Image (cartoon, rainbow, N blue to C red):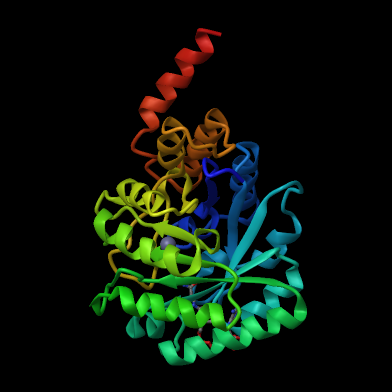
Length: 305
Ligand code: COA
Ligand code: ZN
């Protein structure tokens, strides 16, 4: 991987679909994943092993995993607890993502555990993963702001990341769950984390609630981050975090990165088809902010041969 390579993990099939009024069928969820694979997305969060009562849209993730297209893609799924780990392991999903918020109230709402209990769950699962030889990473949610507790300090995120890594986490995804961070804050926190832990072990996950998603990606990029979550068509949100809107759109992030000379390996015309499909399936996705321009640009390029 050169310093000009950026890895995009599309979280549309999980973060995107979990918050939709319309629950898609397994076939539709798979259709979206296949469209993303056609665009050569290198990593996809395909679903979640969570309670189907809590998040009906993610029911059947185990079955979905058995039908994923083969080929080089880092497939992952979210797990909130030990039971999620067992289900994920059974399904043979290559990567499982625990989630632990930096704020106590968010953990109580999301995983029904305090931060202390949630940390113990993570430590147990990470220990288990080590002996099972499975790949488990951790999302540090509400890393800049919590919808219930407000601002989160950099020190608390650094200390939580440190403890999770000591407990065995190989990779940490730093998430702005409600899209409240501004670029200066993103740069400052990510610079400190990169200095402490190295960029390879870190990703960023930005929501675009205040239209600062792309600026936050740029800020984290300046801090050295080379792995980002994004969501096709800007789908996204968390049912347990009031005010969380869609993630920064994959098509916008890929456009910005490629224009700056970074390589994502993603095929933009196919990505735009996947964005169309996300809009068609959900009826709510808006598409990236640059989508109209991108469509025009690629239509003209095709005409020019
Ligand atoms: N997958 C599937 N079912 C699960 C589960 C999992 N990972 N963990 C618990 N359950 C089931 C239990 O079997 C039980 O089922 P029952 O009512 O049929 O007996 C029920 O959920 C309650 O179990 P309990 O251990 O008491 O869990 P809880 O009520 O404390 O709920 C969560 C905890 C985390 C399972 C639930 O709140 C959840 O799935 N939340 C979703 C989190 C999420 O996806 N957030 C968005 C992304 S960040
Ligand atoms: Zn999210």
